[in-house]
Length: 181
Image (cartoon, rainbow, N blue to C red; front, side, top):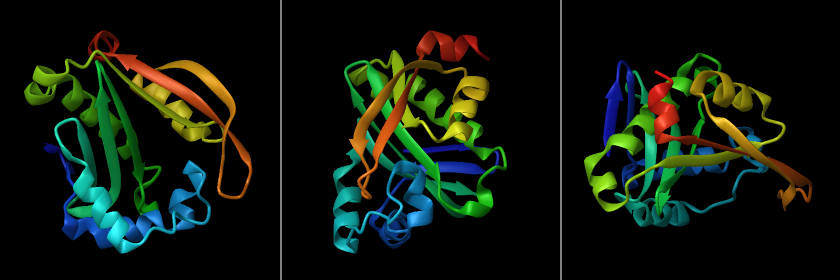
């Protein structure tokens, strides 16, 4: 997979990206918003295996590049008529610069329109979540992406420090995404 718009590229991760992904995933500052303030503690071998296991049309692990520099990652899996993505800008120098909404819209347009994906599983909606504390993300989803908050799951999981975490669930339909233009 490879999609480009202006100075942003989203491309499938390769084994060559393992060192960078492993560094991000093991960095508590990068992973804190996802409930992993100590990082994932994943070995490089496990990161390579993770990359290799997500390499078909219905399941991808991708690198986000801005101006040719790897600055983040995203992934998605497709089940039925729904895509379940996740994303993060890992390089702190690229956060709060307006890239997030652009990257999310690029991904959503790809998921809703890619002929290969939609010939196998026509995508009708995209669903994801964020932590209740992540107010910046909620603002982006509701005000910049046009997503609908569909629920809050209180104390739905325990993070690595033992703290119960609450998730906010979002979705956007194909119709809502294209009507929001």
